[in-house]
Length: 337
Figure (cartoon, rainbow, N blue to C red):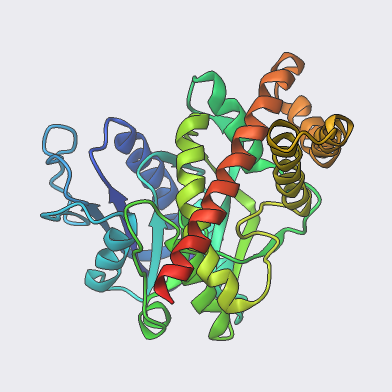
């Protein structure tokens, strides 16, 4: 065992949680036990209740290491993480969402991956292929979230901080301005990731450890994408550079979204301008399938082949949501001017 004591805070933002938070805390305790076997540690767990119902009925603890903070108003997960950052008392901070299950080695691996690389501004764990949600459409969300990392190196450079499960250094995060909170709809992970990069650090994802989560259904994901894309747009214009892991998960998805826009443009011209663009529309539809073919092959490896027709429908829903978010973001940019 290493005799050097390592001190860290674990910030868990939550809003009206159910029993999933108990599973999260159990997995954190297992990960702490793993860490303790290898190092002396000193830690605190800060559960930031973002203006939701009191946690007394779900969570009761006498542990001096766990502190529950009840905020008066619901201001969004970005505000909750920033509040937790400010009141935390240790050098390193883990951000862990309240509806996931981390592996036993997650805390240990994230810490040592972070400190061994002087360029680290944040290091996050990858999501696993395990979906804790039984909903049919969440299978697609799981596949889409996990796609694009198979052929990457063990340490992946990322444009955003992987806020679901990551580690940072408190002093650095406070120095660069911490978490901003656009609204309750999210997007703050891109903004903070941008500030980390601006200050000569990098955001990383490690494939050495993963977490399982309850993937939301397709409609909740689409709603989230609309807001996230619109919030990411000002950052995109500011950086003047399209990140491969920003608004679009892969280059294929970028061209898939573009083809979706052209498809609907050709359909619109067919309907309202009496232009004979039927075959052009078919071409754009086939292009969408072409750009998504690698994702569909990937999804067949982990999910049943019979899901493919439904996944194709979901691809269109995702692309439409990104387009709506894009136009909504452009409109907001003009309003600010």
